[in-house]
Image: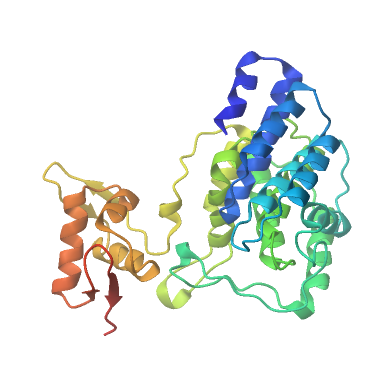
Length: 347
């Protein structure tokens, strides 16, 4: 992504705007853990320089994969490249209609020839295990009610008046609408990227033309996790829906505020920790052991080094917490330290 920063530093308005669009388009692929090819980066630069049009970018990408098809189903570089180019095309267009049809059209344009259901409402129910929910899933709308639910949400938003609201109230309402739109999860895949593009276009319609879309470059995963937390609750465990993370994202996006984005803080078992001078961890509420246990449950091959980085504590502290869980009989090590894995012992 740093490949495009040179255009931002040069200060040429046309090139800078194109660079911002490409950074947003490529950054959004991180939502699904996708990374574009070097070929796309080079082709995007040619577009920024004005040597080729966005249509020529798309044609070159299509030809590239026709000549060198990727047979490995796990390699989704082709998807990342094609969707990035299509996002850049849509964001460069000065057209938009606030309607369910527009939402469906964006999905179709992004994923045509990639998903056979591009632009189509799913006809089956879905669940998705989420790391920040400790393996649980958001309850998405049922297949039978998708079309009606989508139309209802759009109709309610059309009726809503922003007149008299201050900036904070406007952002809170936009967060609420965006959260509801995403929770429907009307498509089999690609919901977050479609919602992000629709949101950017809708904000332009509302008059927010200078929003910091660069946030989607580095924090698209945070955006998705914020949507997850806005739509998940488990009252038996004291977990409530919260739109505060999404509001923070939109506040930075629209008002250029400076809220810090940390995905780990959205984990349902997150405990705020403060590292003391004696290398101990002070916790609010229960001990940090619960957080470590949650990480191990989610990834039974996680290492002490990864735990220390995730919680931002020292390696010795991470090892001490693991040792405590082992001694209390909550986990055990299966196999060697290098190639083995953890087993959580249910009590």
